[in-house]
Image (cartoon, rainbow, N blue to C red):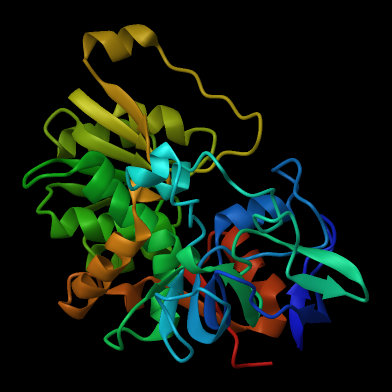
Length: 366
């Protein structure tokens, strides 16, 4: 089957809409007709050349939702017509980390841009076109069965797309990695889609204060609506002092969602005794940060990583749907822009400029 798809050919150049040939699903695979795809910073790094080894041409997109169109032999968990969220971390289901419920840490990742068999499922005039993880920016995606999680109809599929990465990452960092408790002080440094999701989760956990830290002050009213008790512009002189004052000497958890140069220092400097900086941000290849080890020792503070919110998608995604249905995750407030698939570059430009919390590509528009 051929379908018009935005393909990224080289850094600095716009996407090209081309008719890709999409394979039928093989054994253990499903083909999903995507409804919506989230616009993610990880793809932006790939576009800007900040990640080495990205094969091209490539179809981007690492979060999305859609409807199963067809299934290959051996597929049992979904069938055609099922609504699904697409996960970028299916894992192999067999290595030690997958067996402990951490597929994002799988030791048997397929080759970048390819499926586990080393081949791609997209082709252009006889040439392979690679896929960035699940390649959710395509109207049709061929995925391993483990990459899709069936959901019920309590959530619109455009909002469900956010569960594929941003929401699972941000909420999971709060619930799974940090295990924030009632009354814990929280700062979220960087309030895009992942950070805003962390704000929601912190508020739902009963944290106080919940401090949103972001240089785009136009977002502040919206961030308060989704759970921030206070908002701070990190560019202001004394921003760190302000956060420490708000939290009675320092927060228990600082969630760092941005790789902007000053952000690491700010996030670690606002921790209270035994506070933890939860590192969520994806950094460009070769990036480094520095800190004073004496600070870490004398305050018994910690820096921990949180990849994909320490999540297990088959377990966490249905739980997030439950929270949305209960009104505890107002995900519609995360979406600050929607674009038709033909305007994919405009969507990424808006993300690059910091003008959206989360943007969506809609597949039912040309």
